[in-house]
Length: 281
Length: 302
Image 1: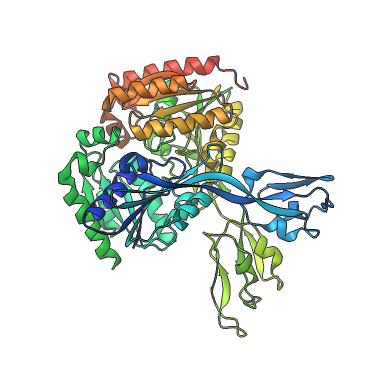
Image 2: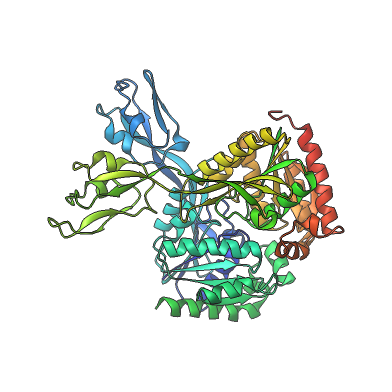
């Protein structure tokens, strides 16, 4: 079972929910893997404190032009939709950071002057934290495209009964890449006007991707009742409400797991996991 | 004209609340909401939309079922797993290939290499953008289409429009509300800005993310300053955030306390400084004074 934890708005508690779900699953003896797909700002390791067994570079193929073979015919520049390869006069210029690695230029070149060379854009880390298998990806600073790193994190998925995908915030390509293929999406929100607005955007996205989903309301006692009303009206399940608690916020600030700072929360996360499992089956 | 972009690395640190307050305090700004994935500034500034435009970030492939022979060339060449054999039959074959428009990155390889010319390239409807009037001044904002790509291009477009609007209205300041992370939309929001203000929180996650976003600003040569929001959640870490930021060459411009009044203001559709005057609002006012002074001294485009 693959469960993605997403949110729309940032800072609502995705990583808290994802790491604590992994924690209660591991305690119950489930083979669980935690995949940190927020490759721009990965934080799961701060809470799970994994032992990293393996580090791999993540690269993606970008074109290299053999000037000796190139006839400057311009076909590569014509097929490229991203201005990643442009032909100016007798010269072909490559902008690797714009490249989507579609392979079009190498395919279209009539003289075989273009080969694809790997370009490193990030790092993959694999390890374990207690009984939890841990995978995270980190995008190199200055690189624009996180989806290829997310794809690698998902491809490295170890054998597990339960795979938890910790998504980045937002509703565009990196989130879509994380959620693709998930059996269930949990949207973490907070009951504020910003939280609700971004939840609505996230719901539209998850519906467009045709994934089953439900909501967790974090800091449930702040804000107003609009989020709850919206979920009821839209018949969206609210699987858990996590209370606002300064002690929890302080524990979070120090990188402590909610379930360890407040062991009584284990019941809440175990029940959440049970409800997710029931919704998927 | 000066352009200040507010970013954070980590999400939910308070970018939008601060931008709304800065706009209310400055009174001479054009506001640009560049967090196009999850735009929230309109909830506080209640804009009246004056102009509404469509945005297309590129094209997506579409297979004409009548022409498809199911040769599978498109699927073989697609690097984005966007092509599936589940399109409608056409009398000759039971199933044709179909492009998943969400997975398609619009590279055009299938369009070019289909021997039957069965794949067309159609302009994607990627979202809408708006020019609006608000109680604190002109605003440019957008709504990215559901599960759409190209938020970087939309961010660049919004910044261009904001610049044009600033010239038109004779305003000397552009306030950009950025998105979390360090990827494409963030890069599009900071390149060429006069200064970036990083809103950090006093947590280990916040510290980790600040380091990366500060490095990003450095990578693109953008002068950056940092402020610590909700500093009293962990005073020790607030000190550490400031000292590490200073070590990385960032200016430290202020601290804002943790206060539930932020949420109250949001519910009333007000910025923090319009909602109250002491404590929290005083912190934000001081932060704006410091930030504006630093921005005035920044050697930007001028």
